[in-house]
Amino acid sequence: QAQLMESGGGSVQAGESLRLSCVVSGFPGSRYCMAWFRQAPGKDREGVAAIDSDGTSRYADSVLGRFTISKDSFEKTLYLQMNNLNADESAMYYCAAYGSRGGCATNEIAYNYWGQGTQVTVSS
Image (tube, rainbow, N blue to C red; front, side):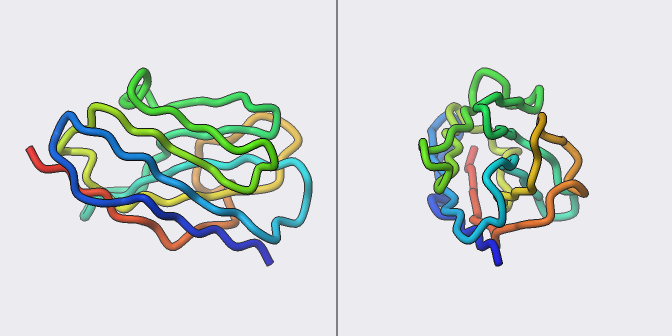
């Protein structure tokens, strides 16, 4: 049974940075997509960034140029470096994964493994 555990959330001021981590264990397969999603109170969950087993990444337009998704060489830890955070990016951030031989989906429906989330609060 795959397990994903996020860490690194916290409270920062607008314009500051945070780095989120997600440790992945027990994943059934060698090729999969990993992604970060976020959900603010009263809003739908949205995709932030995703990365496939070949290292190809994709980003939501709103974070392009400010956020960077990466993973370690053994694909056991997923990262999200978030720079120049905005107050409206306060949300619960989740990492997610699913087995895939190709590119990563942006729709959360494709992801069948989820972490519990880590809270990011950005003050203006």
